Length: 89
Image (cartoon, rainbow, N blue to C red; front, side, top):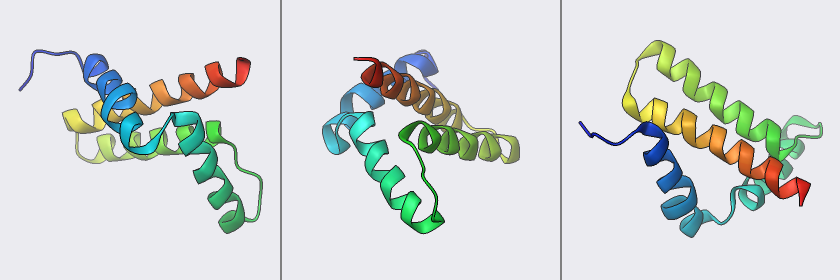
């Protein structure tokens, strides 16, 4: 158990480890959107990828609640916000 907020943990992952490994969420989610667009034969956006991943974590949390799910939900919400901020610049 940790005393840190899930928001602190999620932000550290999104802006730290994950960003170091996979790049800015905008870039990574845009690449995923391009792949999903081919698979689904319809245009998918980076925002939609973030929302789908967030949805996946919500379903997992409903099935078996864990702190990890909640950290990931916060992380994907953070990614969605970072994508939206990037697109406004």
